Length: 397
Image (cartoon, rainbow, N blue to C red; front, top):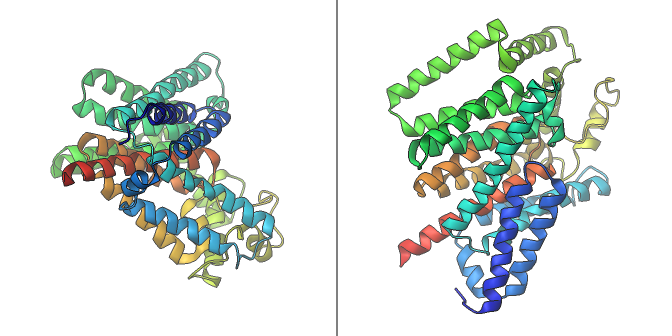
């Protein structure tokens, strides 16, 4: 790595911008939209492109990211949607190009910890504020002050899983365990969003699976199902209310076609979008085509429907636009991220936990297409690729 003062200080500035990206992610769209391009600028002015290219070129995750972005680019030219929608969706996914530049900053393990810790500190403050708004000010939707309840609860679920991992291995285990319990309480008993609840539960089961024996894992799964069933039956806490309400709403949708609830609307989006996929299953309808083809197929939308820009489900939004080919590349990308972090011990387990939370939160919205979810994915990919590439270089020497 070059040791000139100019390279050192510009790279240092870029790494600080990555810390600020993580810091602003839970609460400030403006903040991370400024910090990320600044980090990229620092990479561009430092030069030494041969070193940077050699660092990233062997990453399977990098090439799959470029393949996915390439499909979105090609999809613009056969899309059924207007050019405004094509460019809008492509522009949203263009942020994937931030990833290789952030990786080229080559953050070492210390800086990667700084980045995650900055994120965790802000999440603790957000959780405390949400608790205050709910229990003291009796706010019905406390996450409205931090993006929304879907992304807000997702952010806290990610932090909770990191705390859980650290409670097994890191120093100050009791502190991390206490924070995990507190965050779980906020997500399951204060938060009103189902997305964060599901993501947290699946993240917990994954970490338990990785840390305990097979028999203990099966016992944990059975205990979790029993606990959730009890909470749902008694409608105890926000999670109990949401379980009971969701089951009732889905039953009313599938038996009586009632479309006046969030669960029913999301189900209708998914069912109708999958019908659109049948028309062009291989390569989809093209980038940014969802709005146009949805309107064309359902030209007399119900009052609840409005102007549907996406089906609010990542695993439906991608195949409708890019077909099964696009969905295959996306799943291959997720698998590559998981496998890349599997050799990194505790740090890798933290990344895997974050990835699992992201995977199970994605049915709740089109996360990559959204600003906050998209930048979270950018940060996660950058950390995993950087850690994996440095691990590979160290073991090749």
